[in-house]
Structures are given as C-alpha cells and as structure tokens.
Amino acid sequence: MSEFEPKIVGFFCNWCTFTAADLAGTSRLSYPPNIKIIRVMCSGMVDPKYVIKAFLNGVDGVLIGGCWPGDCHYINGNLKARRRVAMLTEILKQYGIDERRFWLRWIAASEGNMLQEVVNEMTDKLIKLGPSPLNKSHKADLVLDS
Amino acid sequence: MSKSIKLSFKKGELNKELADFFKKMIEKNAIDALLAPMTQPNKGVMQTLVTKNSNIKAIDSIDPFAPVVPVNGAKIASSITAKPSNRKVAMILRSCEIRALVELVKLKQANLDDVLLIGIDCIGRYENLDFLKFQEQGETSESFIEKGVAGNTQNNDYDISKACKICEFPRPDNVDLRLCIIDTGSDALYIESLSLKGDKALEKAGIDLNDSVPASSSNTVKKLIKERINARDKAFEEYRESSNSFDDLEKRFAACINCYNCRVACPVCYCKECVFVTDTFRHNGDQYMAWADSFGTLKMPADTTFYHLTRMSHMSLFCVGCGQCTSACPNDIDLMPVFRTVANKTQDRFDYQAGRAFDEAQPLTIFDHDEFVEVTGQVK
Ligand code: SF4
Ligand code: SF4
Ligand code: FES
Image 1 (cartoon, rainbow over the protein chains, first blue to last red):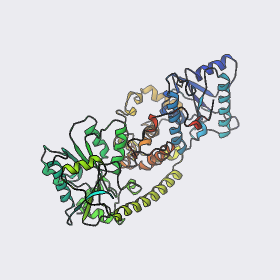
Image 2: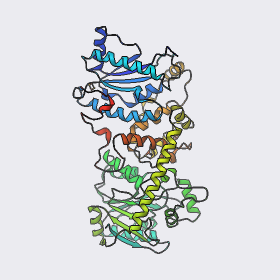
Image 3: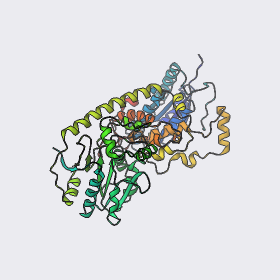
C-alpha cells in the first residue's frame, strides 16, 4: 500500500497548460509521471462525460488545465468550464468522489513552473487521500482509450 | 385580494361546471383550443386537445383533477408549441408539468406566446395502473380531493406516488389562471387570474372577477407545503445516507437494462438525440473485447452507471422532481430520489430552482469573470 501511485488524467488546453507542460519538459522541470495528459483545444470543451468516464475507469484524480480568465482563445470557454466543474463536483461528491480529486487550475503557457507545482501538489494530496473508491486494482495500468 | 370567480357545483357535477366554463371560453373566442385531461371513451384519462373547429361537446369529458399524469404535460406542451400554430390554446397542467415547462421555454423548446396557461391545485397522482383501479372502484376526482386534503390518499393497496408525497408545490405559480380547489368548501372552486393575459381572456368570455380565494384555502396550502418540505428533507437525508458510493449506485441500478425509458419520460431531458443512442456508444466488437481484456470482465449491456451519471450532469439543474422517471422504469427502479437529491445540490450551488421563474437564467448559460473563484482557488 505504501507504494500507492495515484493515476491522474489531465485535460490540458492546447493554448496554455499543454504548452506549459511542454515548457516544463524543455526546462527540465521534473514532475511525477502519474499524470497522463490529454490535449484539448480549450478547457471549455471538456465534456462532463470525459471526467465521469475517467473516474468510472478508476483514475484517482482529474486535473483540467485552462487559460486564466480573460485569456481564453475562445473568449469564455474557461468560464463555462468553471461552472461545469462546480456542477459536476456536486454530483461526484454524492457518490464518494471527494472534491479533492477533481481540480480545475489556470496555468498560462509561460507558467511551466506552476504546472510542475500543481502536478506535484495534486500527486501528494492524492497519495494522502489514497486510491479512489473506484480504483479497483490500483496496480493495473491506466486504460485511457476506453 | 386575489382576483377570482367562484364556480359553485352540486355534488358530482364539478366536471360539468368546468366543461360549461371552458365551452363558454371557446364560444366567446377567448381561446381557440383547449388541452386538458379528459376521460377517454373506453378507459383512463389523458391530455386531450379540442379545438373550436372540433366537436366542442367533447369538453364534457373534461376531468382536470383526475389524480393521474400519464406523461408529464410539459412534453405535450412542447410538441404543440415549439413550432407555433398561431392558435390561442388554453392548457390545464399541474405544478410539476408547469415547472418543467418553464425550463423548456428557457431552452426554446416550447413557446407560450399563444398559450393561456392554467394551473390546478394538486395533491398528488396515482401510478397509471393504480389510477385504472381507482376508476374501476368508482372513485372520482371529487372524492379524491375531499379525502386527499384531509391527508387520506391511500386507497386499498396503493397510494399517490412517492414523488408527490415530497412535492412542495401543490399550488402552481407562473400561470395565467389557477383552478383552486384545496379547502375551498366542498361545493366550490375558484378560478383565479394571475396575469394580464388571464384577465383579458376572462373579460372576453364575459366573466367578472368579483370573488377572492378564501383565506382558509391559502392557509391549508401553506400547511401542506410545510408538511411536504419536512417529508422532502427527510427523504433527502435518508437517500444521502443510504446511497453515497458508486457501489450503492450500482446496487440501485442492478436491474437496469439500458432501455432509456427514464429519459424518454423525463420532461427536462432536453437533448434532441441522446448521445447514448448515437454512434459514440455503438462500439465495435473488438472494442468490447479490449475492455473485457483490460478490466477482466465487462458487464453487458455496458455503460449503465455512465448513462445515469451523464444524464444527471445534463438535466439535474432542471429536475422538477415529478417522478416520471420512476413511473416509467419497467424494472421498478426508484430513480426519482437519485435525481432529485443530486438536483437539490446542483441547483443549490447556483442558487437556482428549476421552474421557479421564467427570467432566471439557466446556470450553464451565463458566466462571469469573477465568480466561483473557489473552484480553482487561484487569484492572479
Ligand atoms: S429526473 Fe425524474 S423526477 Fe426529475 S424531472 Fe426528470 S422525470 Fe421528473
Ligand atoms: S427506465 Fe429503468 S431499466 Fe430503463 S434505463 Fe432507466 S433505470 Fe434502466
Ligand atoms: S483556450 Fe485555453 S481555456 Fe479556452
């Protein structure tokens, strides 16, 4: 149990957080390999279904990364994402998915260091929280294509 | 002082008085058509549309207080008005139907421009099959109301639906006219006008509004609301305690066969085509095989919990607690508490209440730069 490695799915906006992850990579800012990144065109296109499916498949955390308010390339996709996250959190909470497992963070393209911090912090917190109740075998490899 | 007209009736003649009233409305051109629950020639009561050009004598079979709602009328109102007919139609609906209709109007799936919306006092409804028994036993809307107001809705082995027992909206708002019958005396009903549209329609029919709904009636309604709120909160608490994990949810849905009747019956499941019947969920054989490979087993039909949670994420903000989902399930899964309990949380998060007001924007259609900062907890 001590070697529990949380699995995180990151839905990263192409224009900011995804670029920040790239920057972190080229700047040799290391962050844990626990996160599998999915590039999306905007945080506003993260359908609640993606998040629900990820949790049903046993991930321990979901991180959505978007542009800061005012910086979204589609003007307000991130503001829509924020309301959607608030709504979905209420649903997941009722069924035992702690809100500390579901994060939305603003991370600009230049904020590679913040990306590193956020992923580190989330990983630490999830280790403390333990596996998600839906993570039936926390050793099995993450299945992302399903 | 409410603006009302008192309609007195002799025992057993409530529907006759109502029929005369609505026939007069059509004859005087206050309305061109009426949609109302009517007794069907053979059996049962269904929403029925009668126009000025039909045989308006058909209105004699009107029975708006019949304790049954075969389908939530918001969906019927939507099919009639989404593309306008340009005919003035009066629609008699109850609170759960009207509240759902308010949401459909905001979604532009219904349009009330030509509608005279009439709400009725409602104590509850029986399940469709129970209502047929009720009719066969010679019970009537009048007997139901009389006993129901006193709290006796149980009839032999059946009672009003669980959804109705925790419904805190016995008297509908957001209507043009309201048919008030809770505690108005056993021989009287009050037709109350609540809008300019209502005033005008009655004026055109030559009806003066000289009466006022008795205070006893409003007080009894208030008392009923209080009781229902208590029952509702107790039900929420019980549900939240007994169903707080995905395992609980899966147990509840154990008999679910993915027939999707629950979303067909739901008046606020607004998608024109449900994603669960599109190609997105029509997988190839090798996909199923791959899932079974990865997870060890794959329950078929797949995606049951996924479906219910997705539905929740789509419509919980609009759930009005009508209970049609529970009524529609062929496997007796009690869905209403699942949806209503979560709906209570999601709606609260946005200070929103489904069906409360036409001018209250649906939460996911508006957004602001400086709100819900607690979601990210970040400030620049
Ligand atoms: S989810 Fe059930 S209770 Fe809620 S509006 Fe739909 S049918 Fe009615
Ligand atoms: S109606 Fe019942 S069986 Fe059909 S999908 Fe809904 S819960 Fe499942
Ligand atoms: S473009 Fe980055 S959040 Fe919309």
